Length: 356
Image (cartoon, rainbow, N blue to C red; front, side):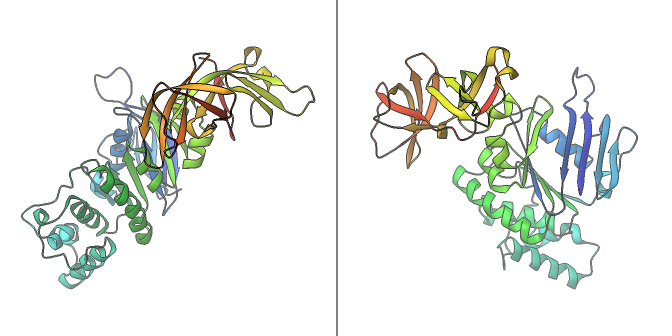
């Protein structure tokens, strides 16, 4: 792994608990990693520790096999050959785009410097814009200039701290997809911090979910969604709820069944043994895509809330037994809050946790 973080703690003076606790992850050269989590979870602190802007109190950080941070070692930030892109772009308003991008290339001869500036501006799809000034650019274009400036010195690692947080939602989603292409074309290894799941899924080869200073899971997007390692990850990623369930051996010996408020999910080979939980009782994660709208289904639910999402409504539903679930309902089916609709479960991945 090009970036290796092993059991790292970051402890601020005067704080009873570390801001980051026992964080461990590996990022291969050329891959893009993303740290995601609620505000104050420690993701930016961990990013700053990788940059050398925060000291670690335990564990070790290695770049290309070289130890750069530990309780005994601290390589200065400027010696790590790391590029950074911030929330506020940090462009110099009095310098042209070309001079902003060239800021970290002063060690190069003039011709080489100009060639590299042209190369990275082409890479971020801003060719011929070197003579313009930041105030003449849109927010998305300014962010591209900031990215070009960070890439220009050919850093061995690029760190991005919520670079799209100041942009509107539509632009953020588009730039997230474009950023992945830019980084891949540049062959860059990058670690990205965001609180936006759509950004994380659009950009990351590996995604880490953090909460209260701990890295709960470092995995690909598919595994985070379908095979969450902890209850927090299951609750944080995607739209879903937990409902009480009971795991029971099938009488014919073919796996187990799950008894749920929506009926029985039979012959499962993807759930734990019944003796994994006391009396087989557990909480089952049901995501919105596990529940299918079916007017003829025997199970009915009342619509508590609905949110229009274009092709579908995201509906919050209450079963007659009192449990709450979520479902996608096609928007060409007019549904109203307070109405009762038919639903049925189609659970491909049974994700269970101990009963809360």
